[in-house]
Length: 369
Image 1 (cartoon, rainbow, N blue to C red):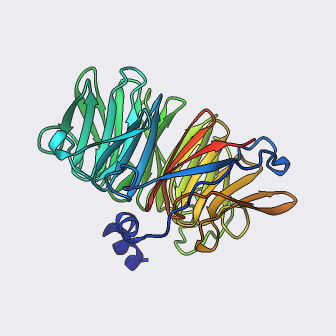
Image 2: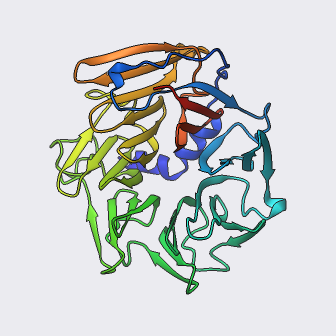
Image 3: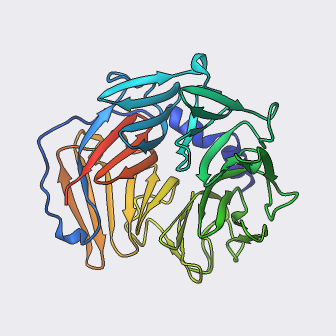
């Protein structure tokens, strides 16, 4: 376990993204739009892939955020913006804190874009980039794995703890093992919902912060076993958490060892051997209404608590495969188009549109059912 910890601390999440490569998927005629096995679950297809050949600054994409009529993509070589069928790149020369963009969110209050990079955090407003680092602000660390906007507050999960910035009072708060129930200061994800903020902490499960009482509580795997989940559904499936997302009163927790669902009372765990989850190694997740979208090293899985729909490239070919898993088993459906790479790192949806960031480009899909 100590060796695993050292490897992940040394940047496995980033290095894996930088090293992987695979052939791209192509476009083809429209796909069928009838998937009764999926029930109310959305099924996506007609995938279109974008790489450096189409205007991306780099094929290694870490995150994606749909913002109305434009799409913001964080890559290894800068921020890419897709608008009016064209790509535009913003780099350090334009004011970006660092070319490696790991996370993006947009404030519903102001429309400002907040950007987490490997070298600080940016606020992009009115065409101008403002940079926050440890040296000029109260930021806990310059490596920003996750950034979200929660009303007037901007929260960041960093390599040196979590923190928030009150954009009204311009004050900062930092939370580490010194003032919060964390075992170590490394944090990888943050989300907000129902008056609470949830932080994915390395080796510390999930930290809950109540924005009204200003009090913390933690959720960890009660069995304390790092190799396997001894007692099912007793808490978070593993203390090494990689992301959190909250929607419809449900908290979803991603780990490198499976998925957890928490409804405020009961925990439920899901693994690749007993569900439709493609892989236990989850890089990122995003909940939208009742559906959670899971970015894994073997493709994209989606789930609503009852039915799974997953997408991956079939046998390293250009063809895709859709897997629909419910109480009756799994149905495999060949797709003439596919996501660009099975190592999926970021996802966002809006209406009938979905975008995913992978280690070999970004892909756009549309709902078929």
